Length: 454
Image (tube, rainbow, N blue to C red; front, side):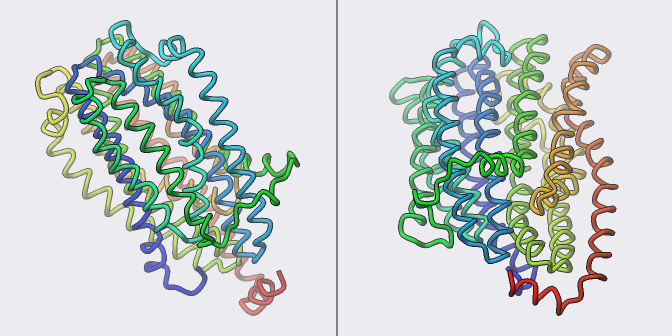
């Protein structure tokens, strides 16, 4: 973490994360693809339940990223026992929160789905889909936690195996349960629930066989509220980001529903495609996070700066490549999912092309947010994470359709991405200026001595 050349280190950690996140995104697209064969309303149901899954992800990422950010810094400071305490308490909390979500969701399934933007024609499909997702909520939340703990130790390859196994299983189960067993949209959800549960247990294997620096032992469980509060504080940016993502999806569905099921289906397809591309940047960024957290904890600030610049350049290259392809081939990509609905293709093409332009600004915002979260600047990271799908998106998705109709639904996310980029720039500039001053007052020899004594 402190000696391997930055490009090699970040890429080594990022590749397994990109593969695992691509596997996750692919089975999300597989759900969308196979369910779309059941009709436009069924495809719209996937978009509605996507916001429900974002709520589960919000809890999982809050505890997972909150634990992982602390663990990487503690390991950099050679405080392994404290890192163990954070890990096991984060895991227990994620399972407990998952059970709460499951119980509430099973009890209030239909009202929740209507609140999330389901129409009368979409509701039966959404209910069938959501039922199994609720049952799998504890394992989904737990998987996010274990995934982040593995990454925090530099064990991204273990995380990749766990997520990829689930993704491959999901893709295989989708057509089997939907068509062969004639379960419809419920079959797609059951496939997701089974694959997520198996992923959770696969991710546990490295801990069970002592292949990690972190040890998940009951002896480290603590009832002190401060431990959970610290985890939640560090994970707050992720919770805000995912929470706003869920709220944004709800409002997007509700605004799109004013223009019919085709609008909901079209925007749902675009959201899944954009997420598929964006996970490439997220995967690269998640390979970057333990590097910047570890080196910041070890006070090797030059490597923090080098890692930021390298990750930003790589992210820009990745997003520019796929944005160009996506912009040119937009109508053909949307038609792949619903070729028989020209309205879905038309609505989706416009929205997707707008998102392709906005992709050029996303790497900077993403890298900035991950930097502040990894070094423990929780409130700054929380503010920045609330911009894209919160502070900017939520008012815009309400205001713009009032003036420009359906175009407001299609353009809101792209406009929000650009505005988020503009706000992130001064925060990054100030941070690296302060970091440069700290280097001047912390000579290299003193930094090394501090690491040894800690």
